[in-house]
Image 1 (cartoon, rainbow, N blue to C red):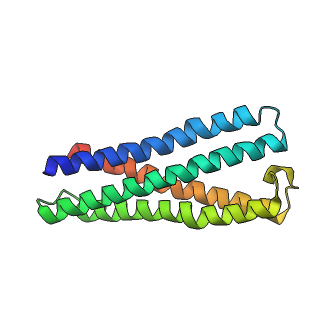
Image 2 (cartoon, helix red, strand yellow):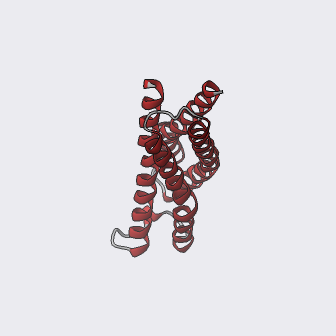
Length: 163
């Protein structure tokens, strides 16, 4: 039973962390490079729409992976023997899931509201425009939030492999 729970936890981490790496290092740059190849405002809007929808769908995957991870950690703690650093693992898994939820629900909603106000590409606005500043701040905050499950997932993978 413990092996199955460890396997499920590791699988959830691989999907979650791997997805974050693939989105940030491969998908986003590729989408923006291809759709905005002429560096036009319309191309950037299209790239943002494609990546935004991709990210929205991935958030659903991350909620499932985070929930599975947290359940497996808690089940191992209840069924025993507790894994080393049990409290740290449970707290980290909770923090990772919370960060994804805030990014995918709260921040994504605020980004969509700012984009609706802009009605086009934020990069087409003057640098001192408040809407462009808000968009940049929210984008940076969402990126920072997604670093929590990325780094936390790597730590949990290490602990899981270490034993």
